[in-house]
Image (cartoon, rainbow, N blue to C red; front, side):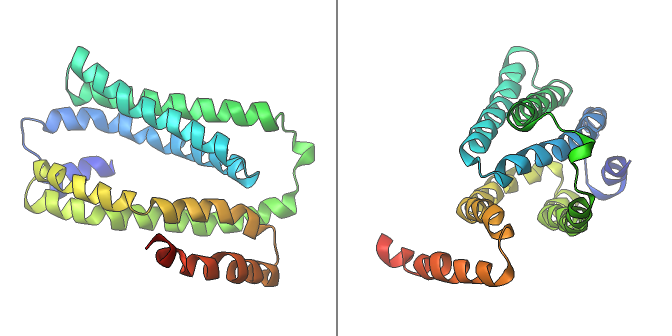
Length: 212
């Protein structure tokens, strides 16, 4: 529904491709449940500090999601009605692969083993993560929406390349936070502060000098 409103009233979409984009919107909506399941599965691996398995599964899923739509666009037809469903199916493959690995290594789970007190705290934390998870994509996409509204949706493709390069520059910071969060979450406030000051931030201050 929101996508239809954006196409009709916010983003300037050429009439020639508007039906094609509209037909792809239901497929894009299917990404939400896949993203939720994938986030829980990946978080389970990271909580147990199985970063090698998490990175390998991410690499496989990302590679399939990048390569398979291109192959289908070349062999079948380079339209959204072909590329988007294939991209969703590729994403679903990566999610099922990650979930299967988690169930294999950590399952089966039973309700009798659930600590509801911990679950309540996790839900409280998850509420703040949900808020930031909603606000952050909106802020990241706002400039693209403005460009699509003012210059047309075709101009967004020229902007997306440098934008993705900037986002990729955050790779080290994201990897560091993913590696530190499981260990820091197991410590109390004083231990976490000691660990971060003594073994993380002080050595990291000398990294630029070492690189030079």
